[in-house]
Image 1: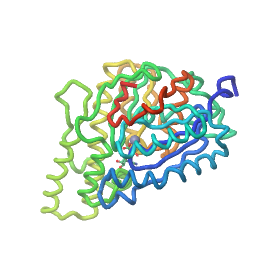
Image 2: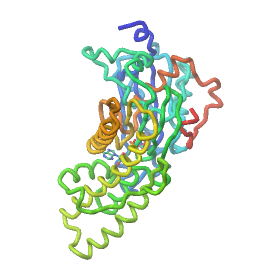
Image 3: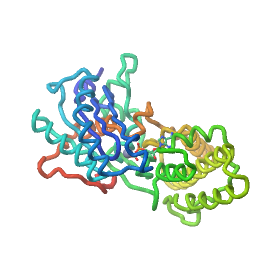
Image 4: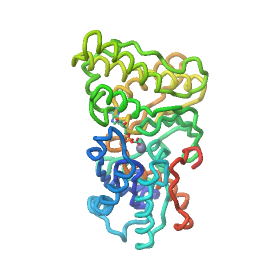
Length: 371
Ligand code: KG4
Ligand code: ZN
């Protein structure tokens, strides 16, 4: 342990931005507990997240989730030095539950509050380390952890609500280079999965099916190739899917193998689009590392395709290796409070606390370059 690690604060973090109620205890980049109460079953009949249902479920779960997070970490309120809470972006009714809880707990226990941007937290989730006696990296503050990394870093957030390429010149200094103009990646996977009758959320199901399918069976167009920018669009792939599936239905019927090959091809098309734009960014911008976060970051094929894209670029121009960092567990890819705590540790180091709790309100559309 070094000086910074000893002084890394113990933070209780809360995230209720969408459909998962989560609380975590973290110190610096170390995750002591990360409790997630999933609402997937509640939203399954709607094939997406229903905001009022989410709000009610957050209200019912939040106290229990916070209690379990504290208990699993083995800490009590005297140990906690700050409360971190997701302020946005996200669903306004859902965000409200976590923010209100954070404020009430802060007032009751006399703790400062740190307001965190959910997309920044996904982007930094790869920094998190498990708490373990055999992992020396696990006992560091955020500044210590950053000593092992080299900026500029390309942050790639790929989730059900966001798909963004963010250039970080240092922690807290972000420029959005590109983002989706319509659906997010996970949303596109979920929507096409719904057409295929795969269930919700479809992203992980498509990943499993794709393992047995032929990704080149259905040739999808590559979107946005005429634009020179780094913007993304998935709605064309969705429309194309609908049309092709209709043709296939008429031709051969949607047999199991047809669906498996279609899932593999669609997933490949979605990730190829991301990697095409990633390559464009690498060709034009000095990048030393790529950090991947968000629900879709759990996908092994996406990780492989990103690594291949970076490797092809570095080989082509004899650039040093550009490593890809991913969260150490899938629980850090989906919505979770541990990533909120890890991000808040950086703000704690700079004493950036919410000044007036009464003014702390939801920011449903808070962009990461405004943090
Ligand atoms: O980050 P997340 O939990 O919520 C948002 O902030 O949006 O991401 C949820 C999304 C869903 O669309 C889900 O289908 C997708 O992440 N997802 C995956 C995988 N696991 C979750 N997509 C592809 N492959 C996966 N293994
Ligand atoms: Zn999220």
